[in-house]
Amino acid sequence: MVDHYIGLMSGTSLDGVDAVLVGFYPPGQPLKVVGHVHQPFTPTLRQEMLALNRAGANELHRSSLAANALSRAYAEAVSVLLRQCALRPEQVRALGAHGQTVRHRPGEFDGTGYTIQLLNAALLSELTGIDVVYDFRARDVAAGGQGAPLVPGFHAAAFHQPGIDQAVLNLGGIANISLLSADGRVMGFDCGPGNVLMDLWCERHLGTAYDDQGHWAQGGSVQRELLANMVTEPFIQRRPPKSTGRDLFHAEWLDQKVAGVPFNNSLAPRDVQATLAEFTCLAAQQALQGALPTARRLLVCGGGALNTHLMQRLADLLPSVQVATSDTAGLPALQVEATAFAWLAKSCLDHQPGNCPSVTGAKGHRVLGSLHIAG
Image (tube, rainbow, N blue to C red):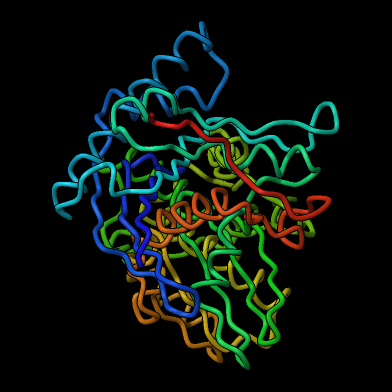
């Protein structure tokens, strides 16, 4: 007997929605991704989501309308996915919908802080006719945790191999690393920027959404003074548990780092891009070697796994580690995170905890997510 769940993910890269249909089989059998759809955001929705990451006028009104628009984009991705897989809504047990993170400030201000993922889950359930599990991060934050990253538990379920120390690096907008010890222990944390700063720099100087395969960065030269400015960021050196987002790594952060370099007017944009790529890889290398130096395999997922320059630099910086995309372990790089939220939805409905206190710093294991029933 197979249970079908859908996972929906839109990350800090703001490139669109990934929807996966996942089949969960009886215990002892691996899950299977039955179908995958990627739907790009419209330019209007992308710009509004980007703007809502910062304080602005009429935020409550704008964020509510943006949540409606995002829910409609999610519903369209679900519709395309169901047609592709020849399934009806009633054949899907539930959707796990992440929503779009616009603020992430756990533990701040009043000791609890908050994390905000825009989504109108009631509208999504109404449009799809499927139960929706959502708001996964809030319960972990309420329990004193970071609410992120939430994927290490899934990474352990999907990729752990007894007797092997390994890690999983998710290179989305922000980079997070899961540390899977041979004895089953799981650690993990956000380790720095993934694609967010590189994408921003590409959009500013090339008018493109991203650096295709890292070719632009590959042709540049790493600027050592600029790199030194970047690696002094306190977040990189902070001990876990820790998580971050566009609240920290944004255009002003990058402009400040560039401005701190003598004769910065002579910096070629391509060299800045090469330095940003190096910073992303160096932060990941330091995270892995500092937290699990015995790791001998690094699986890379997320959009950054398609960046051949990043993959080569990771391999160069980690000569004793086998660096490969998650495809080599049976789950394509662009499907991992959405699949994690299908897994988290199933965990919620099964009343199983979805967080790892060793990762987030929460007081204990918690069942994550809220539920809108379609009926």
